[in-house]
Amino acid sequence: MSACRAPRRLNRRRVTLLAAGAAAASLTLSACGEGASGGSAQTQFVQGKDGIDTVAKAERKPVPELSGETTTGKKLAVADYKGKVVILNIWGSWCGPCIGEAPNFAKVANETKDKGVQFIGINTRDAEKSQAVTFEEEHKVPYPSLFDPAGKLMLRFPKGSLNPQSIPTTIAVDRQGRIAARSIGPLTEDDLRKMVTPLIAEK
Image (cartoon, rainbow, N blue to C red; front, side, top):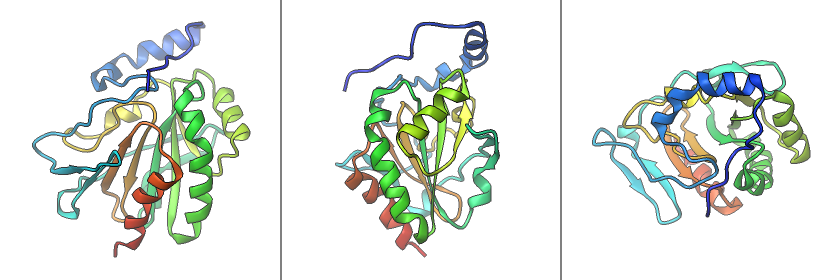
């Protein structure tokens, strides 16, 4: 899938946000593109044929502290959902593949909410919350998203973990708050279920 880019039109606020997030370049995130699978010698992960990388229980690293304000102005901390399987989806309203996968995420989120699963988005590279909210309303997204225009939350993922490397990226967190799986690029309903179902079954 070819990479797509954020809109070129920049206002002063957007320039400020991009400058503040310049350090995010170290992640080599490609806008709406599929990046190379990562990690390091510190993490032994299995690269699945379906594009879902998984980590054995003994090798999993804790998810970093991810908190802040949502796209609708509420406070949210991923740590508050420890005890549930958490599915983190990094997206932007300007991102074509994010638009394509949005109905899949809405459907699976609704299917699994009574099974101890909490979906949380991380909205990035949108200059205004209103852009993200419009996206959520249009695609009937049933879960909250942290507003992270400069990509600072993505920098918190530890080296050697299954960290985000493109937009969209999806990261699965087990009930103990550890990073268990990652997929780079858009997900179908079936692939998303393949990521979620084994974690629901874990004890």
